Length: 213
Image (cartoon, rainbow, N blue to C red; front, side, top):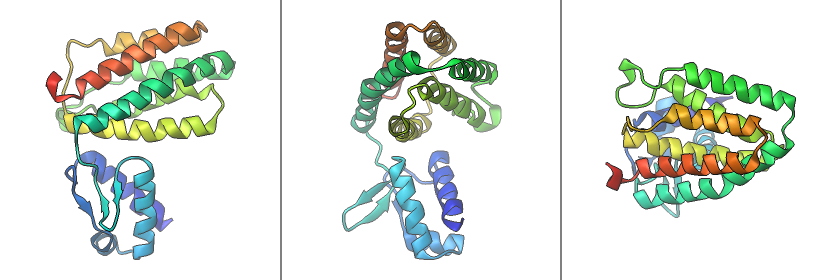
């Protein structure tokens, strides 16, 4: 239970930007701040590393990932390779309950404002969560928990890059891209769904590079 609390604290702090890219995550300091043992902190840090939100450095402990376009383009390449294939499986295997969940997840995403004044340039927490749920729900029809765990890890890494970039893309039709994903999935068209997702992920990757600044 303590490990879960420390993990949640670390994850939220990193996603909020409380720790800059490359910052060390010192177990002793975290243990003192949270009033827990080093063993509890290390367990929580291992979970954060597993999500791609921290790195474990040989003989140097833990650190927030150093920001680099190359790193996030590698994450994007992994997502473009894996997620369209998983979506194909999901479209082919998903049942009626999956269809209902996809429709509900898209409805929530479409009705959630992307930005909130109090959260500045970042996408709102509510929209970010609705966005994650929609993308994950699209893939859940695959029925393979190992593939979904891979999605979870890559998604967390992508979200961190998106939070750090703090760039809006006003000319991009996010709503239209998500609508086309839903329509292709529910039409049971694996080719169209995979193509729409690949295009969506490619645009996201382009928006996170400094060249697109």
